[in-house]
Amino acid sequence: MKNKLSGLGVAMITPFQTDGKIDYKGLEKLTNYLIQGEVDYLVVQGTTGENVTLSEEEKQDVLQFVVEVNKGRKPIVYGVGGNNTASIVKKLSTLNTAGVDAILSVSPYYNKPSQEGIFQHFQAVCEASPLPVILYNVPGRTGSNMQVSTTIRIAQNCPNAVAIKEASGDVMQIMQVVREAPESFLVISGDDGITLPLLATGCHGVISVIGNAFPREFSSLVRHALNGDFSKALPIHHRLFDLYSALFTEGNPAGVKEVLHFLNICSNHTRLPLVPVSEKHSQFLYKILAEQGLN
Image (cartoon, rainbow, N blue to C red):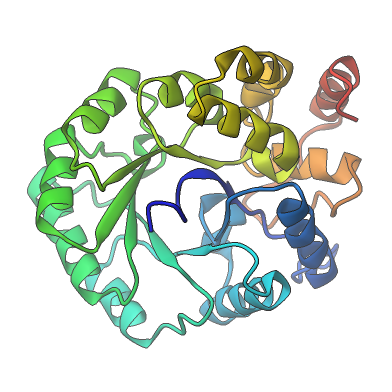
Protein backbone atom coordinates (compact mmCIF):
# COMPACT_ATOMS: atom_id res chain seq x y z
CA MET A 1 0.00 0.00 0.00
CA LYS A 2 2.88 2.36 0.73
CA ASN A 3 4.02 2.19 -2.90
CA LYS A 4 0.48 2.70 -4.20
CA LEU A 5 -0.15 5.86 -2.18
CA SER A 6 3.23 7.55 -2.50
CA GLY A 7 3.81 10.32 -5.02
CA LEU A 8 1.10 12.31 -6.79
CA GLY A 9 -2.54 11.57 -6.22
CA VAL A 10 -5.03 13.85 -7.96
CA ALA A 11 -8.29 14.89 -6.30
CA MET A 12 -10.36 14.63 -9.47
CA ILE A 13 -12.97 17.24 -10.34
CA THR A 14 -16.41 16.10 -11.52
CA PRO A 15 -17.19 17.64 -14.93
CA PHE A 16 -20.75 18.85 -15.46
CA GLN A 17 -22.79 19.75 -18.53
CA THR A 18 -24.64 23.05 -18.91
CA ASP A 19 -27.81 21.44 -17.49
CA GLY A 20 -25.94 20.23 -14.39
CA LYS A 21 -25.79 16.58 -15.40
CA ILE A 22 -22.47 14.75 -15.11
CA ASP A 23 -20.34 15.11 -18.23
CA TYR A 24 -19.06 11.56 -18.72
CA LYS A 25 -17.21 12.41 -21.93
CA GLY A 26 -15.32 15.10 -20.03
CA LEU A 27 -14.69 12.67 -17.16
CA GLU A 28 -13.29 10.09 -19.56
CA LYS A 29 -11.03 12.69 -21.15
CA LEU A 30 -9.82 13.89 -17.75
CA THR A 31 -9.13 10.35 -16.49
CA ASN A 32 -7.01 9.50 -19.52
CA TYR A 33 -5.28 12.90 -19.36
CA LEU A 34 -4.23 12.25 -15.77
CA ILE A 35 -3.03 8.73 -16.47
CA GLN A 36 -1.06 9.88 -19.50
CA GLY A 37 0.35 12.67 -17.32
CA GLU A 38 1.94 9.97 -15.14
CA VAL A 39 0.10 10.65 -11.89
CA ASP A 40 0.57 7.90 -9.30
CA TYR A 41 -3.08 7.43 -8.30
CA LEU A 42 -6.57 8.86 -8.75
CA VAL A 43 -8.81 10.19 -5.97
CA VAL A 44 -12.50 10.06 -6.84
CA GLN A 45 -15.21 12.02 -5.00
CA GLY A 46 -13.12 14.03 -2.60
CA THR A 47 -13.92 17.66 -1.79
CA THR A 48 -12.64 18.81 -5.20
CA GLY A 49 -15.10 16.40 -6.83
CA GLU A 50 -17.99 18.44 -5.36
CA ASN A 51 -19.12 15.23 -3.67
CA VAL A 52 -21.57 17.00 -1.35
CA THR A 53 -23.68 18.03 -4.36
CA LEU A 54 -23.91 14.52 -5.84
CA SER A 55 -26.49 11.91 -4.90
CA GLU A 56 -25.28 8.53 -3.62
CA GLU A 57 -26.28 7.00 -6.95
CA GLU A 58 -24.29 9.63 -8.87
CA LYS A 59 -21.23 9.09 -6.66
CA GLN A 60 -21.31 5.36 -7.35
CA ASP A 61 -21.83 5.95 -11.08
CA VAL A 62 -18.83 8.32 -11.21
CA LEU A 63 -16.68 5.86 -9.31
CA GLN A 64 -17.58 2.90 -11.51
CA PHE A 65 -17.07 4.98 -14.64
CA VAL A 66 -13.56 6.00 -13.58
CA VAL A 67 -12.79 2.38 -12.63
CA GLU A 68 -13.85 1.24 -16.10
CA VAL A 69 -11.86 3.93 -17.92
CA ASN A 70 -8.82 3.34 -15.70
CA LYS A 71 -8.70 -0.39 -16.52
CA GLY A 72 -6.38 -1.03 -13.60
CA ARG A 73 -3.69 1.34 -14.85
CA LYS A 74 -3.55 3.41 -11.65
CA PRO A 75 -4.64 2.81 -8.04
CA ILE A 76 -7.95 4.46 -7.14
CA VAL A 77 -8.91 6.10 -3.84
CA TYR A 78 -12.58 6.80 -3.13
CA GLY A 79 -13.89 9.50 -0.79
CA VAL A 80 -16.26 8.25 1.92
CA GLY A 81 -16.68 10.69 4.80
CA GLY A 82 -19.09 12.85 6.72
CA ASN A 83 -20.28 13.89 10.14
CA ASN A 84 -22.63 10.98 10.85
CA THR A 85 -20.45 8.07 11.95
CA ALA A 86 -23.23 5.47 11.85
CA SER A 87 -24.18 6.47 8.30
CA ILE A 88 -20.57 6.15 7.09
CA VAL A 89 -20.16 2.77 8.77
CA LYS A 90 -23.36 1.55 7.07
CA LYS A 91 -22.22 2.88 3.69
CA LEU A 92 -18.84 1.16 3.99
CA SER A 93 -20.54 -2.16 4.72
CA THR A 94 -22.39 -2.08 1.39
CA LEU A 95 -19.80 -0.32 -0.77
CA ASN A 96 -18.84 -1.88 -4.09
CA THR A 97 -15.05 -1.79 -3.80
CA ALA A 98 -14.19 -3.44 -7.12
CA GLY A 99 -11.27 -1.55 -8.65
CA VAL A 100 -10.78 0.61 -5.55
CA ASP A 101 -7.59 0.45 -3.48
CA ALA A 102 -8.26 2.71 -0.49
CA ILE A 103 -10.79 5.03 1.17
CA LEU A 104 -10.23 8.74 1.87
CA SER A 105 -12.28 9.83 4.88
CA VAL A 106 -12.52 13.41 6.10
CA SER A 107 -12.58 14.32 9.77
CA PRO A 108 -16.18 15.10 10.84
CA TYR A 109 -17.26 18.62 9.94
CA TYR A 110 -19.80 21.06 11.42
CA ASN A 111 -20.37 19.00 14.61
CA LYS A 112 -16.88 20.08 15.82
CA PRO A 113 -16.20 16.94 17.87
CA SER A 114 -13.57 16.74 20.61
CA GLN A 115 -10.30 14.93 19.95
CA GLU A 116 -11.77 11.87 21.69
CA GLY A 117 -14.78 12.08 19.37
CA ILE A 118 -12.51 12.27 16.31
CA PHE A 119 -10.57 9.23 17.53
CA GLN A 120 -13.68 7.14 18.15
CA HIS A 121 -15.15 8.22 14.81
CA PHE A 122 -12.10 7.03 12.88
CA GLN A 123 -11.83 3.90 14.99
CA ALA A 124 -15.36 2.97 13.88
CA VAL A 125 -14.66 3.92 10.25
CA CYS A 126 -11.44 1.88 10.13
CA GLU A 127 -13.12 -1.16 11.68
CA ALA A 128 -15.97 -0.97 9.15
CA SER A 129 -13.89 -0.27 6.03
CA PRO A 130 -13.06 -3.24 3.79
CA LEU A 131 -10.16 -1.18 2.42
CA PRO A 132 -7.22 0.76 3.90
CA VAL A 133 -8.21 4.23 5.11
CA ILE A 134 -6.52 7.57 4.49
CA LEU A 135 -7.46 10.05 7.20
CA TYR A 136 -8.14 13.60 6.00
CA ASN A 137 -7.49 16.62 8.21
CA VAL A 138 -8.71 19.88 6.70
CA PRO A 139 -9.61 22.34 9.50
CA GLY A 140 -10.44 25.14 7.06
CA ARG A 141 -13.45 23.12 5.92
CA THR A 142 -14.32 21.00 8.96
CA GLY A 143 -14.03 23.65 11.66
CA SER A 144 -11.84 21.46 13.86
CA ASN A 145 -8.19 20.41 13.72
CA MET A 146 -7.09 16.82 14.22
CA GLN A 147 -4.23 17.29 16.64
CA VAL A 148 -0.94 15.44 16.26
CA SER A 149 -1.62 13.27 19.31
CA THR A 150 -4.96 12.17 17.83
CA THR A 151 -3.44 11.33 14.45
CA ILE A 152 -0.69 9.28 16.10
CA ARG A 153 -3.19 7.54 18.36
CA ILE A 154 -5.26 6.49 15.35
CA ALA A 155 -2.15 5.39 13.44
CA GLN A 156 -1.02 3.25 16.38
CA ASN A 157 -4.39 1.74 17.32
CA CYS A 158 -6.22 1.33 14.01
CA PRO A 159 -4.30 -1.05 11.72
CA ASN A 160 -6.51 -0.14 8.76
CA ALA A 161 -5.45 3.54 8.96
CA VAL A 162 -2.51 3.69 6.58
CA ALA A 163 -2.06 7.41 5.87
CA ILE A 164 -3.23 10.95 6.48
CA LYS A 165 -3.90 13.71 3.99
CA GLU A 166 -2.77 16.70 6.04
CA ALA A 167 -4.34 19.95 4.84
CA SER A 168 -4.05 21.96 8.04
CA GLY A 169 -1.48 24.23 6.39
CA ASP A 170 0.50 24.06 9.63
CA VAL A 171 3.97 22.99 8.54
CA MET A 172 5.19 22.48 12.11
CA GLN A 173 2.21 20.25 12.90
CA ILE A 174 2.72 18.19 9.75
CA MET A 175 6.44 17.77 10.43
CA GLN A 176 5.62 16.56 13.93
CA VAL A 177 3.25 13.94 12.48
CA VAL A 178 6.04 12.80 10.14
CA ARG A 179 8.44 12.51 13.07
CA GLU A 180 6.09 10.62 15.41
CA ALA A 181 4.07 8.40 13.07
CA PRO A 182 4.85 4.69 12.65
CA GLU A 183 7.25 4.05 9.79
CA SER A 184 4.57 2.38 7.67
CA PHE A 185 2.13 5.32 8.07
CA LEU A 186 2.17 7.77 5.16
CA VAL A 187 1.90 11.53 5.59
CA ILE A 188 0.47 13.14 2.46
CA SER A 189 0.36 16.86 1.74
CA GLY A 190 -3.11 18.31 1.18
CA ASP A 191 -1.85 21.71 0.00
CA ASP A 192 -0.18 22.08 -3.39
CA GLY A 193 1.69 25.25 -2.47
CA ILE A 194 3.64 23.75 0.43
CA THR A 195 4.15 20.30 -1.06
CA LEU A 196 7.78 20.88 -2.01
CA PRO A 197 8.95 21.91 1.49
CA LEU A 198 6.85 19.13 3.03
CA LEU A 199 8.46 16.53 0.78
CA ALA A 200 11.83 17.88 1.90
CA THR A 201 10.89 17.17 5.51
CA GLY A 202 9.69 13.60 5.03
CA CYS A 203 6.18 13.63 3.58
CA HIS A 204 5.44 10.88 1.10
CA GLY A 205 3.49 12.75 -1.57
CA VAL A 206 0.45 14.94 -2.18
CA ILE A 207 -3.22 14.67 -3.02
CA SER A 208 -3.42 17.58 -5.41
CA VAL A 209 -5.85 20.01 -7.01
CA ILE A 210 -3.45 21.59 -9.51
CA GLY A 211 -2.57 18.09 -10.70
CA ASN A 212 -5.95 18.01 -12.51
CA ALA A 213 -4.67 20.64 -14.94
CA PHE A 214 -0.94 19.96 -14.95
CA PRO A 215 -0.42 16.30 -14.09
CA ARG A 216 2.85 15.87 -15.96
CA GLU A 217 4.45 18.99 -14.52
CA PHE A 218 3.36 18.36 -10.93
CA SER A 219 4.14 14.64 -11.00
CA SER A 220 7.62 15.54 -12.23
CA LEU A 221 8.04 17.99 -9.33
CA VAL A 222 6.94 15.37 -6.80
CA ARG A 223 9.08 12.64 -8.31
CA HIS A 224 12.22 14.81 -8.35
CA ALA A 225 11.62 15.91 -4.74
CA LEU A 226 11.07 12.35 -3.51
CA ASN A 227 14.33 11.41 -5.21
CA GLY A 228 16.09 14.28 -3.43
CA ASP A 229 16.75 16.20 -6.64
CA PHE A 230 15.50 19.60 -5.55
CA SER A 231 17.50 21.41 -8.22
CA LYS A 232 15.04 19.94 -10.74
CA ALA A 233 11.94 20.22 -8.57
CA LEU A 234 12.37 23.87 -7.61
CA PRO A 235 12.03 25.41 -11.11
CA ILE A 236 8.71 23.58 -11.58
CA HIS A 237 7.55 24.81 -8.19
CA HIS A 238 8.38 28.38 -9.18
CA ARG A 239 6.63 28.00 -12.53
CA LEU A 240 3.40 26.86 -10.86
CA PHE A 241 3.75 29.13 -7.84
CA ASP A 242 1.25 31.86 -8.79
CA LEU A 243 -1.39 29.27 -9.60
CA TYR A 244 -1.27 27.59 -6.19
CA SER A 245 -3.25 30.41 -4.60
CA ALA A 246 -4.98 31.76 -7.73
CA LEU A 247 -6.86 28.48 -8.22
CA PHE A 248 -8.53 28.97 -4.83
CA THR A 249 -9.21 32.74 -4.90
CA GLU A 250 -12.83 32.27 -6.00
CA GLY A 251 -13.31 28.78 -4.64
CA ASN A 252 -12.28 25.22 -5.37
CA PRO A 253 -12.85 23.57 -7.82
CA ALA A 254 -14.07 26.64 -9.74
CA GLY A 255 -10.51 27.81 -10.34
CA VAL A 256 -9.08 24.55 -11.62
CA LYS A 257 -12.22 23.91 -13.69
CA GLU A 258 -11.63 27.24 -15.42
CA VAL A 259 -8.07 26.18 -16.26
CA LEU A 260 -9.28 22.78 -17.50
CA HIS A 261 -11.74 24.68 -19.72
CA PHE A 262 -8.82 26.71 -21.14
CA LEU A 263 -6.98 23.45 -21.81
CA ASN A 264 -10.04 21.95 -23.57
CA ILE A 265 -10.32 19.04 -21.14
CA CYS A 266 -13.83 19.77 -19.90
CA SER A 267 -16.25 22.62 -19.19
CA ASN A 268 -16.05 25.00 -16.25
CA HIS A 269 -19.56 24.25 -14.95
CA THR A 270 -20.11 23.72 -11.22
CA ARG A 271 -23.14 22.90 -9.11
CA LEU A 272 -24.69 25.41 -6.76
CA PRO A 273 -23.81 26.76 -4.30
CA LEU A 274 -20.52 26.91 -6.23
CA VAL A 275 -20.37 29.05 -9.36
CA PRO A 276 -17.71 29.48 -12.07
CA VAL A 277 -15.04 32.12 -11.49
CA SER A 278 -15.71 35.71 -12.56
CA GLU A 279 -14.63 37.01 -15.95
CA LYS A 280 -12.02 39.15 -14.22
CA HIS A 281 -10.49 36.19 -12.43
CA SER A 282 -10.70 34.06 -15.56
CA GLN A 283 -8.56 36.63 -17.37
CA PHE A 284 -6.13 36.69 -14.44
CA LEU A 285 -5.74 32.89 -14.57
CA TYR A 286 -5.17 32.98 -18.31
CA LYS A 287 -2.54 35.68 -17.84
CA ILE A 288 -0.62 33.44 -15.45
CA LEU A 289 -0.83 30.51 -17.86
CA ALA A 290 0.42 32.64 -20.73
CA GLU A 291 3.29 34.10 -18.72
CA GLN A 292 4.46 30.66 -17.63
CA GLY A 293 3.90 29.00 -21.02
CA LEU A 294 1.25 26.67 -19.61
CA ASN A 295 -1.60 27.57 -21.96
